[in-house]
Length: 300
Image 1 (cartoon, one colour):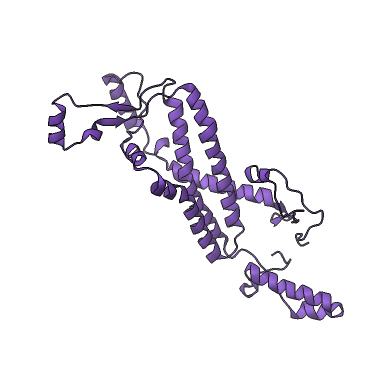
Image 2 (cartoon, helix red, strand yellow):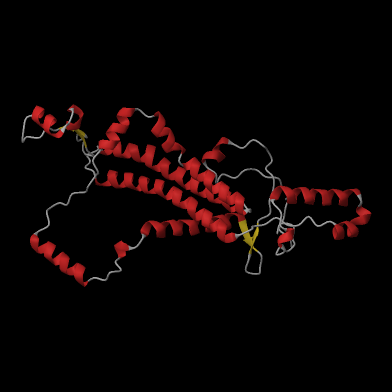
């Protein structure tokens, strides 16, 4: 543990606040009575602070990653639409009335109103608007997603208690749903109407499939194995890979090897100022000035 002792004994495991308090009391007594160092070290055991259960923490990180992967998929859907829609201006709103009867007869038979004849479809977008959407929406969304996932994983990885890590992953999941809650409660009803009636975007083939091509495709399907590449649970696989990736990145950024095949935390230093520059919020990789001395170093 951070105190340099073994904490396999469950009776020596404490939460952060308790361990810091017990360590402070011991160190204070050592300062007050330097001639009683051996007696104090033998009589007072502050215990250790450490991870209670690695499996529970990893499962919580995986649950958190499941909650953020949906936002990543929505961003990729936006990229998909921008890529496949034509690079020209086309109407997204059309007024269509069935031709098999008059409008009034259609309204009476199908129990429709005037708005039911208004169709909303995803159509062409001029190239300049695609570029604008790329730099003002998609790239910021990707940046926010990466920072949310990275900081969320770091928050969970630095939580040791089982109860605390479960509570924290619940809190993080709630925070991620705030944008949808705000949209649902504060957006105009007309916007909800448009989104509810927006027809799904389908990429149309350049030409229709012939009967012979369809027959050959059926034969190929019969010959192919049941374990197809497309049938793999790719969302679950992607979530698991991202979990391993962000957890590995956390260890890479905050840990160092101990020479015995394990990992130890890097030495920690306090920042020189309590006021962080605004740029470090938007660009966390910018270094913040720290004191030259370490307030904690890994035990020998």
